[in-house]
Amino acid sequence: MEILSDTHPKITALQYRLLRQASSERKLAILGEMNQTVKTLALSGLRSRFPMDSPLKLHRRLADLLLGPELAHRVYGPLVD
Image (tube, rainbow, N blue to C red; front, side, top):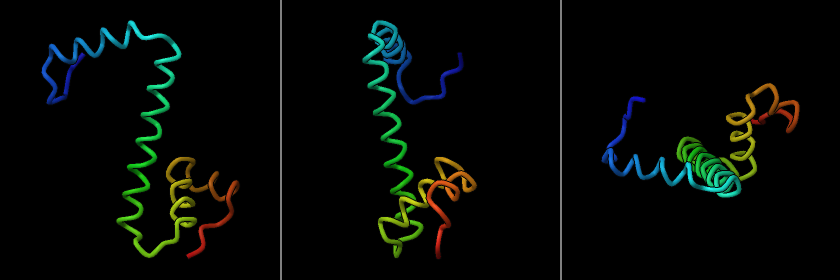
């Protein structure tokens, strides 16, 4: 596996070893934390691109990113400008 990281290879190996040893519950918790981080970063990016949008509109834009515009429109209605 190619490693594209600024992390030292010994630390990367340690991270993989700890992940392999983690319980399924811990792995799911890590995955949930990673998903939340991605959503937080995406919302931050939307806030910087659309600073005048309300929180509701920003979350609707986030739905476009996460679900795709078509499904987000079906679930949440149109994105009103």
